[in-house]
Length: 634
Ligand code: COA
Ligand code: AMP
Image (cartoon, rainbow, N blue to C red; front, side):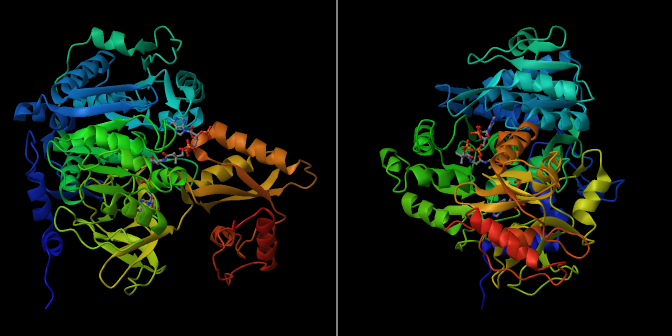
C-alpha cells in the first residue's frame, strides 16, 4: 500500500479545488480588502487571481511587521566587500527610508500606475527604490546594471517611465563602472524621455548632474514628506521585468501585486521552510528575478532578515566570501546559481576556506537559474555536508515550478532532477503534436493552465506576444521553453532550453539578439549564434559566421570587432568572445539553420542528421572547423 506523504496530500488538495487552495493561502496575508473573487478571466481571456482584493506590497513587507512588533528586527543587511561596508536596517528604519523615498518620488509626480526604471548596483537604495514604487502603487522596472545603454534604452522605450533611479557607479572586481554616462547615453538613444533621473552619488565616483532633469537622491529625501502606502487591486501590476526571448526585443514580464504576495509567502513556507526572524540570503542581483523574489520581496513579506550582498563568490576578496557571509550573519538558507559554486570550486577545490567559518546555522543550500550539473551538486554536498536543493523556475513564474517541498516533507533528491512539481503547477511533457508523452520520455515541458498566483499576467503592452510566445503552441498549456522528462516517480529532469535562449553564468540571454548584432557587421553575410557548454559559466555564446564574398578580414580582427559590438550593444555580461568563420551554415530544405545540431557537434554529443537537411556534407565542414578551433575541448 502506498503511503501518501504531506506533499502528495497538499498537491491533491490543490488539484481537487485550486480556488479553495489559493483562497486559503491568500488568507494568510494582511489584505486591506480580502479577495472574494479568487480566479477569474480578464478581457484578454487570460486567468487572473484575486481581482477584487486590495493590498499594498510595501505595507506588507514593512509596516505590517512593525505593527506586529518586529520593528527592531533586522530587515536588511547590506554586506559589501567591494566597498568594505556593512550596514543593518531594522524593519522600522527600512520602512521610514522607503516612505521618505516614496514621498520624494511623489514630489516628482510619480503616481499609481506610473512606471519607474531602476538601474542600480547592489546597494540598499535599489531595494528602497523598489519598495517605494510599490508603496505608491507605481510599477518598477529594474534593469540589470551589466546591461549596456542600448538595452536600457529599449526598456525605456517599452515601459515609458516617468523617472529613472540610478547611482553614480557600480563596483565590479577591481573596477569601478560609471553608470551615469550609460544612463545619459540611453537617454539619447531612447525616443521616450523620462522627466527626471534620481541619482545616488557614491563616494567611489561622482557623476555630473544635468540641471532641471537630474535630482540628487539625498536632496530628494531631505525635503520629502513620508508617503503612506496606496491601496492597489490584486491585479494591479507591481513590476515589469524584462527577460530575453527568442528575438532581439526583450519581453516585459508583468507581475501583479496580489498573486505575487501570496505566492512569495507560500514559497517561503513550502520550498524554503523559513519563518519570520530567519536569516535568508539569495546571492544574486536585484536586476534578475531571483533578486526581485528572494532578495527583496519574499524575505520581507515573510518577516525574515534578507542579505543584500555587493560582491562576487570569488576575488572579493577570495573564494571564502560566501562562507564568510553565511557565518557572519547567521544565514539559515542560502540561494544562488550553480555558476557561483563552480567558480568557488575552481579556486578552492578542497574547500579549505570553508574550514575557517562556523556554518552551524546554515541548514540548506538552494540552487537555480541554470542546470545544476551533478559534479557541482556532489562537490557542494560533500564539502558542506548540507542538503543541496535544486529547483527550477523562470522569470515568468517568479517562484519554483518544481522543487523539493522541504516545508511539507523533504523528498529524497536525485542528481539532475529539480524534484517534483510544486502545488499550483500541473507539469506535463508534450511531444511536438501537443500530446502527453509517457513517463521517462523527453519532450517540451508545459504547464496546464491556469498558472498559479505570482506568475506573469501578460507581456507589457503586448498581449498578442504573450499568447504567441507561450500559449498558442499547445492550447490550454503554458509553454516553458525548456525540455525534459518526468520519471516514474514524477521527478522532473530539466534538460535545457529548446529555443534560442542561453544561460551564461546564470544570466538569461538571447542568441537571436546576438545574431542581429553579429549579422550587422559589414563583412558578415550570415551567422548563427549558439550556446556551447562551458565548465565555469554553464554556457557561452559561439558565433558561426559566413563572410560576404570578397570580404578580407583577419579572423582575429573579425572576432575582436564582433566581441566589441556585442559588448557595446548588450553589455559585458553577454560574454560574447568566440567567433568561427565557416563556409556555409547547415540548413533544412526550408532554410532553417540547424542550430541545435551545431551545438551538439560543439559539445561532442551524438546527434541525428535531420532528415530535412539540405546538404549533410555541411555538418562535416562544421565539425572540422570546430575541431580546428578546439571544440569540443577534451
Ligand atoms: N554591472 C556591470 N558589469 C557587470 C555586472 C554589473 N552588475 N555584472 C557583471 N558585469 C560584467 C563583469 O564585470 C564582466 O566584465 P568583463 O568581461 O569586463 O570582465 C562581464 O560582465 C561578465 O560577467 P560575469 O559573467 O558575471 O563574469 P565574472 O568573471 O565577472 O564572474 C562569476 C564570474 C561566476 C563569479 C559570476 O558570474 C557570478 O558570481 N555568478 C553567479 C551567478 C549569479 O549571480 N547569477 C544571477 C542569477 S541567479
Ligand atoms: P531566468 O528566467 O533567467 O530565471 O531563466 C530561466 C531559465 O533558466 C529556465 O527556463 C531554464 O532554462 C533555466 N533554469 C533555471 N533553473 C534551472 C534549474 N534548476 N535546472 C535547469 N535549468 C534551469
